[in-house]
Length: 135
Image (cartoon, rainbow, N blue to C red; front, top):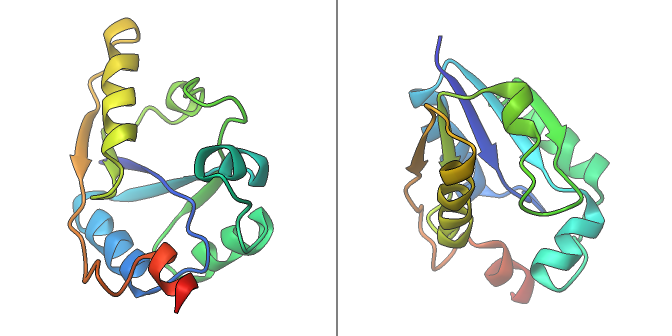
């Protein structure tokens, strides 16, 4: 069984998110999403999420594309979830290059057999949360 792990905010779940989740599902038998707490989102993005953690998590659960939604670390870069889940594949969005680099740095001191896979964009000029909020 291939276990996939996907980090993301998923604020106001949209079609771009759904396409990304479906792609991850084609590559993993079991998909867990690590959803950052609201205060971590504010730190990462410079603004609070539009939707609370609970609403974002429920949107993911009700999508039928995710088995488990777990709360991410409050302290960025600790990746405690990796010890608990032990994924085969860690998925990152096409716009999460900084996350991929940070994970690679983390793996230098915390070896793993997991691979990092970047998911394809889906109409990023239209389906990107920052663009949709400004429409």
